[in-house]
Length: 157
Image 1 (tube, rainbow, N blue to C red):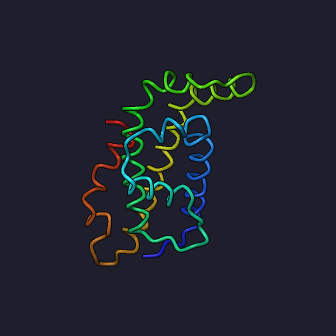
Image 2: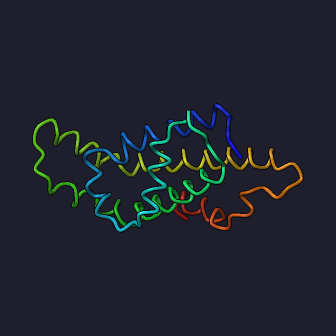
């Protein structure tokens, strides 16, 4: 099913912008790239965060991207956030770069939460759209068992 809802398109753009600016910034990206995510997760994250909403948005693809984003958030929250300062502070940044790096590190946990909340909001909107368009059929979200854990992964429970 193709998604045409403009609020969903705007939300996807917002997710991508927030990810590029605050999660995968030039200061944080090196630490992210050291994490052991499989290529499929990175591919799905790239599709979600670099998506052009002018191209087709398909529900099944968006669900797979949300599953990847939820796993990304859970692993980053567990494995990167606690030791981020130690990993990043080893760099040789000085002056303005040091200030910007420290800001990125200090705000990373909050920015990850914002990213998680945006992905969760997208998930809720997609499920609503899925239910609305099911018309007597089983909605797609019910057919994808990996979606059952998305909320728990995003909120950290």
